[in-house]
Image (cartoon, rainbow, N blue to C red; front, side, top):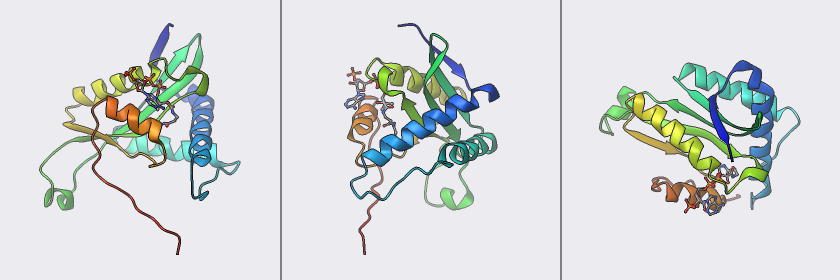
Length: 162
Ligand SMILES: CC(C)(COP(=O)(O)OP(=O)(O)OC[C@H]1O[C@@H](n2cnc3c(N)ncnc32)[C@H](O)[C@@H]1OP(=O)(O)O)[C@@H](O)C(=O)NCCC(=O)NCCS
């Protein structure tokens, strides 16, 4: 399969919105607490906010394309350590993966690996020393995917209804 990985440009906005909607639907579907949802305005609002974060934090978005069709994306930013971070953590330059999705019909064909390879190389070139991401705990598939790429767990977010 001939997959092209390219940098996001403004004309890809509609495709990016669709991917963000598919990602949210996926997460809503696996939420055991049924706490999450996707309102009709979600795609545009969320994608606008993502693009803002990308612009403000030396971020980048790569899209995967097959036969001129967008089939996945990865988005990431480079974080700056504040003086508060530095009193409790050694100096590091973290790259953070904000979003990752491969559209349903194209999963398990190494597109996710291609996207991750591209963004990790981008972070290395920018002299990042670590790369990290947040995962929704019920998303066992994504957890296994990242484990295979040698990511280790660091934080656990806990919640209970009261
Ligand atoms: C997670 C996701 C991006 C992976 O992309 P993908 O193209 O399907 O993954 P790849 O084909 O590149 O798989 C790479 C490796 O991860 C493993 N893997 C991928 N998805 C997996 C899953 N659901 N369960 C177990 N292992 C999985 C593959 O078996 C493969 O292992 P191998 O290298 O030993 O063969 C994709 O499944 C997806 O978009 N999922 C829904 C959205 C999502 O969860 N996004 C991440 C949010 S944190």
